[in-house]
Structure formats: structure tokens, C-alpha cells
Length: 356
Image 1: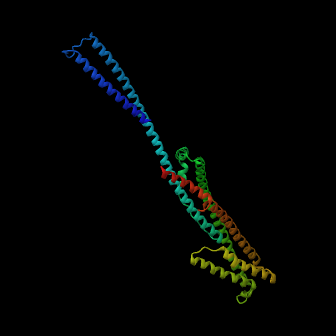
Image 2 (image 1 turned 60 degrees about the vertical axis):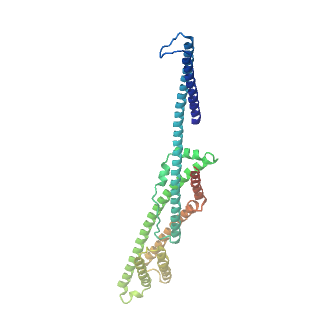
Image 3 (image 1 turned 30 degrees about the vertical axis):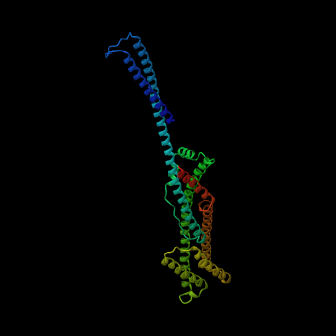
């Protein structure tokens, strides 16, 4: 459109020049018609002068019209130029928005992949060592918030402008936003569930630790009662004392070993290698001579409760690990369909930016 206005302006200038030349030619011709002419000595009653004046008037009127046309064309060209500049600025804004969107999506994808790797390591640890205080980490990144806070309509218009030739551009836009919403909420939910799981596990560990300490102390008290009852020379020969004496030093040595290695207590080891062994021996002894009157029956019940509490920790940890495993395989594994589709959107935007 701007090119058309330039043609009009050039045409006006060309015609104006021609008319100006004609004006000069006619003026010279009129002057030559008058012999011995004098400056400003004009006979307005002369028919030639009157005809010349009429001609000049017509030419000047036509030139005035041409210059009006020129002014209008100049004005319209300026308006059109401003409109084109504004449109170009809008297009540049769309491009900048698309570039920003792509950069944030790349960063978000990296976060998802990195978080997926952490999830895999964590759920494998939970499945292998469900009673251990396994931990993971979460990336502190604001890219999700930044992309969610972007102008939704502006994002829509940017994608619409550059992808309007693609039949499924609107579906791509909706998938983009739904994926960002899902992964943002999923990571927040995962963090909250992890925090709850850790807090619950710590509470259960503390409870089991207190029960183990009670068992240890009660066992020592029972042995002391036997010492008082049977004397120093005979109390160590008593069957229930032998069972408790087998447990206490072994339990103490294991706790010291964990402490020296800087490792947390493995409650599965306590359950299988200590309390289960104790319960088997206690049940055999109960069948042979029965419980004593110094608290052996209560200790058997306490040992059973400790094993039950340890099993509950394992059960809840395995359930939680299975849940994480499901989400990892469905949404956070680099090779899963959902993440591939999300990456595909980013790749399309990058490809479009390369074309611009």
C-alpha cells in the first residue's frame, strides 16, 4: 500500500513539473507577443492578457488540486507507515514472546527430566531399603511460575500468528498449557507428599526407637530380678536369662557398629536378626517351661509390637515408592509418551523460530 502512495506522489510531481513548464512557455510566448514590453506595465484590457490570465488561472487551479492530492497521499503514506511500524512492532513482540516461551519450556523440561532422575533413584532406594530414612531433593526453580504468570492471551496470539498455517496449532496451544499446569501441580503435590511421608516416617522411627529402648531396658531389669532371686552364681544359668543375655550384647554391638559407620539403624535388620530370633527362642521356651513371673511375657508382646511397627513402616514406604514409580514411568521418564509430547511442543516452537 505504501508503494502505491509513492507512485501517486511521483505522478503528481511529474504532472506538476509539466504544468509548470507549460506555464513558463505560455508566459514567454505572451511576452514575445508584446513589442517593447515594460515591467509591470500590463494592459488588462488586452484580449491576449485576458486569455493568458484565464489559462494561468486554470493551470494554477489544477496545480492546487494536484498539491492537495499530494498532501493527502503524503498523509496517508505516513499513516500507513505508522500502521506498518505498529504491526511490525506487534510481530516483533510476538517473536520475543515466542522466544521467551521457548526458553522457559526448555528450562522446565530440564527440571522435569532432572526431577525424574531423582524420583527414580529415590523410589528404588525406598523399595530396596523401605525402613531406611531415604531422602531426595527438589529443584528450586521459578520457571513454572514465570510461564504461568505470562499473559495467556498474548501467548495465544503469538502462537496463532506464527502457527496459523498449521491445522492443529490451537490444540498444540491447549496441550502446552495443560502440560505446564499438570507438571507444575504434580511437582508441588510430589513435594507435599514427600514431606508428609518423611515426617510420618520420622515419627514412626522415633516410636520404634523408643520401643526398642524400652525392650532393652526391660530385658536388663528382668536379668537383674533373676540375679536377686537366684544369686550371682546361678542366675546366668536360667533359661530366660540366657535368651535375654543373647539379645542384649548383640543388640548393643549392632547399635555401636551403626554409630561408628555413621549409618542409620536398619530396622529390617533389627526385626529379622534380633527380634525374630528372640521371638523364636522365646516361643520354644514358653512351650517348654512357660513364661516366668518377671516380665518375659510382656517382652514377647513388646517384641511382636516392634516387628509390627517395622512392618508398617515398610508397607507404607513400599506403597509410597510404588506411587512414585507409577508417576515416574507415566510422566517423568525421558522415554514416556507424555514427556515426549511435551518436548515435541518445545521442538515445534524452536523450529518455527529458526524459520523466522
